[in-house]
Length: 264
Image 1: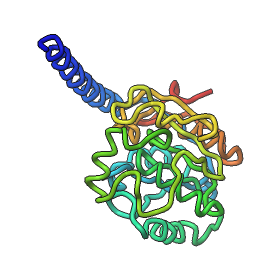
Image 2: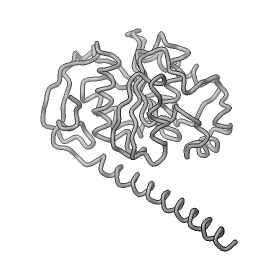
Image 3: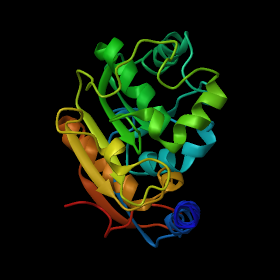
Image 4: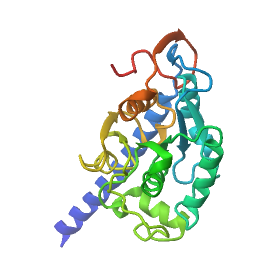
């Protein structure tokens, strides 16, 4: 009995130490992601012709959390818009209707389909919306979004259920998370993610068209330089017509895209 108890105590201590290590890793990588860089790459594009994206925040986050990513994309020549629905509190029965109204605003002058870029739970919303309104979506790009496997086993599940008020596997909208949307889809994932398992955010070959690995913490996705480069790479893969020439220039943008960070 003593040996068994000792084993359980060791397992508990190991589990706690792993959690602490994940937390420390998240903090370190988050701090590293916002270190200013002296160089940035800018994409030259017509003022009204830049490819458009709507950027969706993660669970409990607002548009403010995605501001570094929007700034980086705008600086690179894209037109990145807020999702405009306030704090992301999970799925609701009217979620897609509200997102429809937001896209009506973005597409008022230009009805062409747009790219949806979602962080964490925001990426799940983007994928599911693209399934019900594929005519409005050009492509979906996810950042550390757990669309593959059993979502209820992730650290995010308990938080989600507390915030949304329903079980993670029983949302008020119809969805099949692993099923790929009928539009080009890219999954950006990280082995360093301390919140979402890498396999859940990477997905299988039949769950995403492209899978791009970066090295950043889960909380750092919106501000990480390499992630910004990966998003631009994902846009070029999913939407070849949206790729535009690069112009190198000096910049002091915190969390910006470094010359070394851009994929070849």
